[in-house]
Length: 219
Image (cartoon, rainbow, N blue to C red; front, side, top):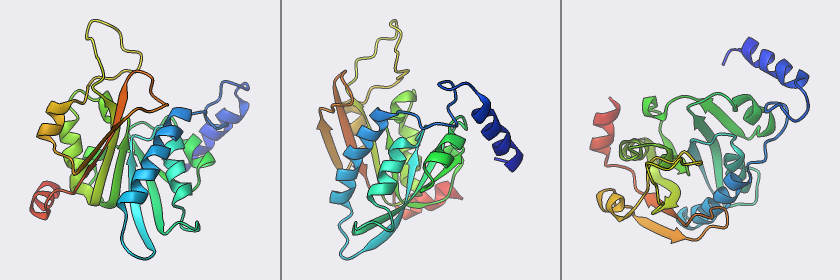
């Protein structure tokens, strides 16, 4: 984003009436925060290398980056955590980029399509985003290509979607056993989340794709 654009948006945010600006005040994205807490517990369990380690993490589809910021604070390089994470957030829309940049300086917020990205990260997370896609499989495969150590995805599990009934969550895909039979995770956790009242959620951990598949796809 060009500097004049950022300045223009900042001025626009400051002059808008209180309660209507999204750039000048922190959004209450409590659901994303709750889901991020769930992911933090899993990351602590999965990143078991001995000694202190510092890794890069890409969070795909962060929207406000409230959840990304939770991860950035729990695993901050200056924290007491043995695992240190440098967090980058990538969203396809720029609507909340300035909001995230102002409120969450420990998160590097970028705008773009992850399918166009070849930059690799140690850990890639995608929390409650893939269900908004009609065909999430190819995206998951690409996330596994740009991850060095692991991919962690989370979403509702066996969500009941009815094409003839409007979906207020704008979910287009329901993850079920058929999906996980085709895309077999290394670890799958199904649980009842207090942040999702319409059924269960899942967290799935995937290893990166083999180097030969990764190299050929990213050429």
